[in-house]
Image 1: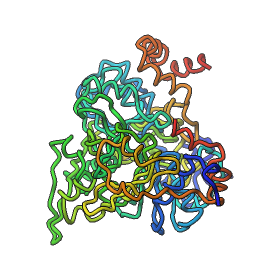
Image 2: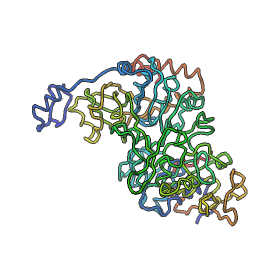
Image 3: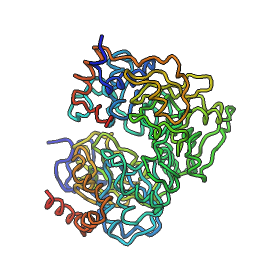
Image 4: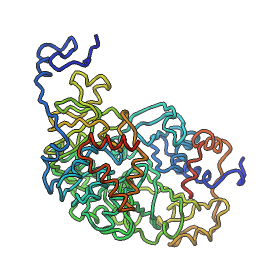
Length: 255
Length: 313
């Protein structure tokens, strides 16, 4: 087994992202961002072999291949142009792991704009697919810069709705909604509380609960008896370093 | 002899044996829709709603976009899976309203000129879920007023777009859904890898995106292409599945080699990342923007633009 000295924070986060897909079975694993992509591929290469995943262009590759190498040989098992991706979103057979510029205690996510959306201080990507993702299938988030600017009391725009919005919406519109986990550079968070409020699921090795509380602008549940995020196994470290991301592209997201 | 066209004129087309004299006559008689970028723009009017095909910084009809930039057109509503098309049109002050799910340069996630336009309040905007956007195009293509979707419920999409309405299922489930209205387009601009002079278009890359829907949703569709080929040569480089733009939906064909530059147009060429970086940097520096504009955007034709690119290399 590995030791803390061997696994670095980016590798711990990759494994925490991979764990988001545990139990998903035969669905489209659709991570966005380098750490999530390496994590998704790691999940399929190890404990979740039935997943299919995108090459982020337009096919589903059946083999393991490195991120950031457009010339890497691919075994193509199917074709998924964007139109098909939307069809799959609406079918429900997808789990997206995407970024969040802001996220709040109910899991509301913002990737659209900072400030008033009518004339924002900072225009970001736009709503993208977040509104459709959240009401159709499981969603998880990756936030590489955990601070009171990203884990906020209230998001400026709700791109992906969280549990309070879904409670308000009620049945049947909320029936496919699940925010499974949030992975940050400090820890892993979920919504396994009575009222689906964000709680600490684990803190990464070397991170204290106090650090997490200080970097979060709302009150987190589950601050007692916090466990540590699990370390990558030797096999996982080998796959990350030698097969899935030999160039170390994952490290760039921590700058 | 090759079964499908060698380089011949339409009248002497080499046709497969099953294609009788009638097929020969159809090829010869097909309407010729070839025109220039400037002729396309002369058919557009101030205030029009114009759809632009492609996705982000991928297979955008850039030679047509530049022709709009150097025209007097104004007050346009631009509908797109946005990339540098929306960015450039905003920077040049051509846009009254942008309709989009996102605007991105892909390798540069945020489009800097679009951001400036939004942050300065220079443009009106309709921001939608990107899947809902597909349904708006589909509704216009099918001439129905809307398509229903769950996307948007619970998010701020309905807050940002107070004109959007919901509908209740007329069946026993009674589910409430968002009604995405048809995106009726006055004109659409798309870029294809190959086309014939009649306006049959072919994509050879991995994704058509939504270009067929842009073509169907518009009153007039103008197609630019890397290369105009004889109809009987359309299957030389791709299977029948790549022939996704039918000439019944096109009104003009512009031959524009490297017409999608600096966006990608595989398999013909990839994205010109160095050029895109230069373009993005002009958003921070008015002098750089003026230099970029006079060198590349003010080039009076696509041929002159290609010369400016050669001089750059």
